[in-house]
Image 1 (cartoon, helix red, strand yellow):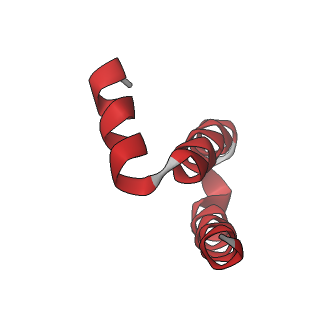
Image 2 (cartoon, one colour):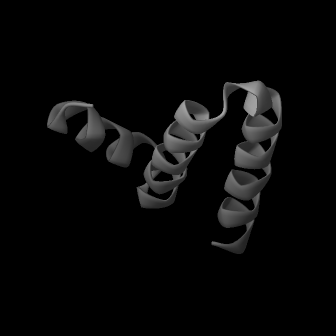
Image 3 (cartoon, rainbow, N blue to C red):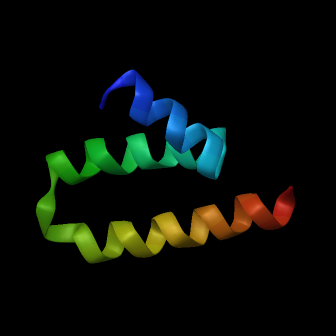
Length: 53
């Protein structure tokens, strides 16, 4: 990911979403069989972070 794209993500979604997206990307590379589960967990964690804030 280029620096420009990372800044755009931070502006659009906030630091937590960037961190979660990075974590998701590494997990996706490690195990593609759990793609749907990871997407679901990412949505749940993102919702909880937004709700807590």
